[in-house]
Image (cartoon, rainbow, N blue to C red; front, side, top):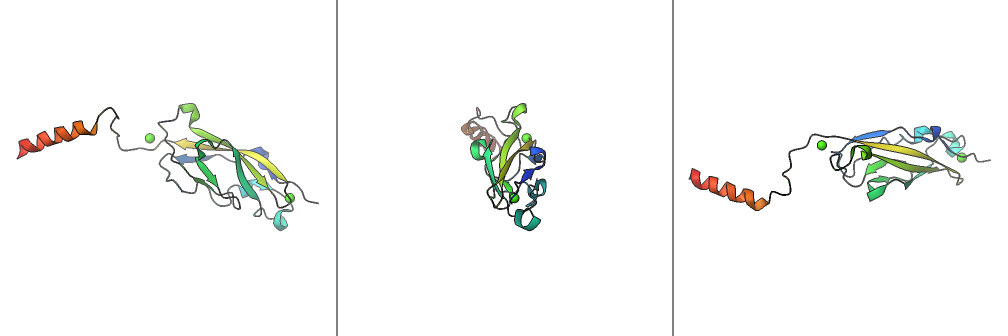
Length: 142
Ligand SMILES: [Ca+2]
Ligand SMILES: [Ca+2]
């Protein structure tokens, strides 16, 4: 008889990533989620035959998950400053399904941390303004 997979406490360990994380970068080790799932009969006792999917919480498709491995990667850029303090985390509902079709769901929190960034000019400064100032300066030098 197939037994259902069980996510440890229904909660995966948090993952913290800096906002400077590149799109496409892996956010977790391949077995990071696997190691938190228990299923006595999955593929002969291992957990590596689970299928993973994100059910909800993935607004803007920020994250992608590899179904066969549970590897999560960043799919769209995250911006610490653009998020309100209470929103600097994404809570995903992740479903894990075994080969017999039994499943469990758990929450996975991805916390966004601040990165030092180069200063960015406010959008109210039109590019043309700076170009003009620069040209005047150049004229004075010559
Ligand atoms: Ca099973
Ligand atoms: Ca920053």
